[in-house]
Image (cartoon, rainbow, N blue to C red; front, side, top):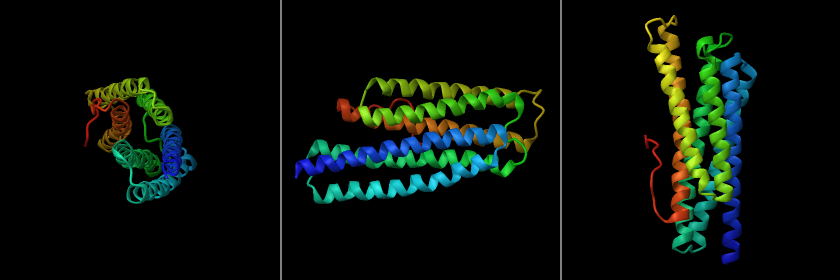
Length: 220
């Protein structure tokens, strides 16, 4: 029975890693759609969110089945509860990437990001994709050093987010109020994407060390 349990736990982890790979790809597509007004890549991102949602549903069903049928001991139960939380965080990352792509789609054929902020949003997208990829590596390896790397990547996302506001709020900003609203929403989507990765890192740190410590992300 224990062998069967751990084999199915391996399936849970594999699903979680697959989900993070999907959301990493989604962030790449979403960022490209923003910067190039690429409608096809925006649609690819939005469609991929359905695959993330379906994988979350099947993974949650597997976790709940393990909880109810396999009689997990304390350590295994902590892993299962953490996995349930992680599926929610990864699914939310997919939603946020899709929100970014929807802004690009709504503004097509215009670019949603004006040229003065193109480099900033390129950086946000690159860091977002990297943080999702590292989250998948962390789930697969439980390498605690990756928790700190993920937190540093999130700090850089936060820095870029703040720098975007400095540009938009400057009195010389030539953009419209509508553009400013779009940019504020987009910045928030990127920032929250990173925060969910940090929350996942906190769950894994707890499983490794037995001590729960939030790594700095907001829980909102």
